[in-house]
Image (cartoon, rainbow, N blue to C red):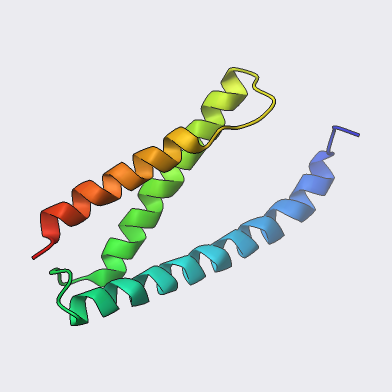
Length: 101
């Protein structure tokens, strides 16, 4: 069974997005706490850990979604996230090397 009815999607998607939003909030809170700790220990120097956490998560998600879209367009059977993971690590290193004391 590879097909889902519109009615089923109407029931499933709101709950999925609700769960997704809860998970994103938890991720943001976790990362914010890590960043606040790094700031308090003077390992990092910036004023808005919450905004920084949000932007980092949004960047990572955008890279992940781009990888998924490319896989769909290329009709790939499996999605290889290794490039988006490398890109995420590289982006984070660029950001933190620029704000480190």
